[in-house]
Image (cartoon, rainbow, N blue to C red; front, side, top):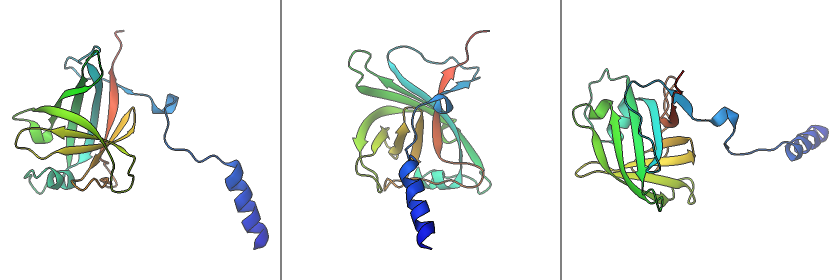
Length: 169
């Protein structure tokens, strides 16, 4: 038993355990959207994702039918092109089909599990604030109103991934 413990400790010392990082396996994916994709120094990022419906509807205080299975999202975050300060955002999605959600966004710190976490707060008049945890430059995770991460289910998670425009062929 002692030998097994020593082997395990040795393996742990020589194995690196790292958080998600930028790399070839974590690059923005190419979108095939037929809509114009915003570009320029005033765009902080464009993110898309498909999420499970029911839990997110509860967080955003949206009424949905019991058979609502998934939601589709497109988020554009804008910034001041000179200072890179946050400015406004546009959120399109299943819950905002009739009226695209627009507002301002800010960056704060702290989630329920990490006081140093970077959190994006999306505000809009008379609507629930949306909290997104920055996993890295390419991934955002939905948080509930208490800043707990939403975990998803066996088919969908609550993430938005950075996208790039498909290059012309």
